[in-house]
Length: 470
Image (tube, rainbow, N blue to C red; front, side):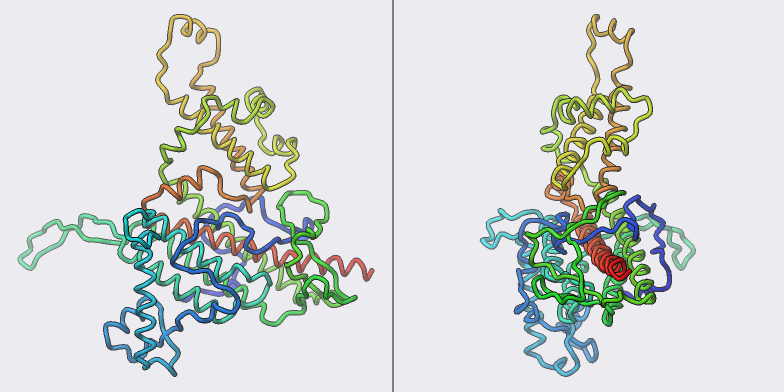
């Protein structure tokens, strides 16, 4: 992974993405849930990163030092980031073990998760997307605290991501270039270069990845600590864990069913101002990383083709999809305000928000399809068009308003799971490059969201403790 600057140098990531209204501050504390409850990272099981637990993840092959690598075997392992410590770098058995592990996992990728070899496996793009998702689950699924990632898990993350991302080195596009020969003759030749979307987005994602790990590493020594629920001292207070980003929310409380989550504890007098400033700075950095990863993920999903199966499943009427009340608001309002409409709906759970997002997205594409359809008009329809608004214009307006409503909904609920269309695009996608960029940006978006949530937990507990002391 390339060297990157520390996030301490600047509050802004610097990619030029627009800030979303989902930024959080001390006035509207929000609290994290299960760190792997971020449903945008869920997918079918992949064979690349097998399920691991706290006692088994360190058994994965160790890294190898690149020093003294002269054989082709060692050169391959060095390129894929599979390096051992210097004390065992020259052990041929260890080198062979690493190579066999690499062969096994890439064989599973090529087989499309079909170990029978009968050709019934899923597409390579889907397999590699699942592999990145499941690797994230293996490494970060049990990481629920604001603290550095365990060295072995960090090593596992970097090593296996290097293996998966190495595929992008061979995804190229051919361009025509002019070359001058020794005799002065100018000829045109085709040369290869990295595909533009990978060339632009992959280095940015690698930098965001490194910055998130650096943020976690910065909390090696802290003034706060964690305790399991039921083992809390009298001088500590509990943090909530149910997280929902809404502009104005009451003080959230921990959901009792999430008893497994650790509880943030702070000293009786609260944390120091220096620690509080450090937390706020890292929260702002993580929030910018979250926005950047979300922007990349949204752009990649937008470039994916809409599956025909999704278009075939669309309702015939957009009004029937969103319901009468929402349709009336979208159709009759002279100045449509998606924020006002969302406020009036009183959405109380992520499930309701996701259900609304699916309905609005389906109606948007229904209206877009109608606006593009050639209309075979009868004489009666022609008469109706003379005394009413043009049908195509109406569908265009409704589609635009549905798009703005969907955008505001996703901004208000940044932890929202994938919509039906997004899931359909990912499973029907056959572009390996887009699959890697989409899954990588999605898991980084999830991690950044959780880091912001963990920091908000600490700030909320500190604020509560300060009020108790007053």
